[in-house]
Length: 270
Image (cartoon, rainbow, N blue to C red; front, top):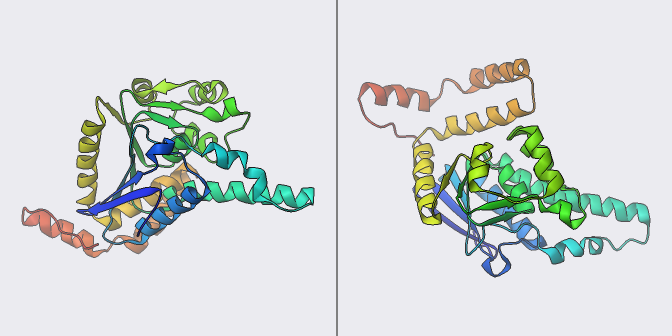
């Protein structure tokens, strides 16, 4: 697929998707949000892709929603009826929420590799990723509070399941910057690196390790982890039993055992 706001490369079952509006600090206008959803829906359906690395071109990772797009929210409706206006604005918000949810719905693991600024909507985006990595000089801010807004596209819903709720509240109420080392210490990112180059190299190695596993199993793990986030342990165990009753006796399971017996690496079909 061809994109205007993103750069996409696929090699060795790994998709490297990059924000590609460096002149705008990788902020996203309305068209860019739509393009991001199309990208993740495409990567979800593309069988040769087993894992995705999300990064940013240029100086920053992502500055969130383009301020002009934010200021023009009222232009999303042309109705003279106040009720219709509110309904149209709600649908616009749900549309942007859906774009970020497409990262979760994508059955392939998404590894966010963050450098420098990750602001506002950028935090919403990486909160929907499966794993996060950053450079030591990367910084994050839930900026909406300083713009007179309640963050409305995922941060307040997803981040409390990732980090301590008290820390989450402090970051949301103050909008303060927190940098790579603190992000690592509070469990927001898995690891920090000195440079972007080192980060991409190391994250690619992690992606390669995942890409070598059974894609069927990796998709199942992601589905089970997301289900558990929103359900009780008992419900999740029941769901797990139903899942493996349907999926356990796979060719990938046989290939794994055969490869172990023959002391070789297993080879799985896409």
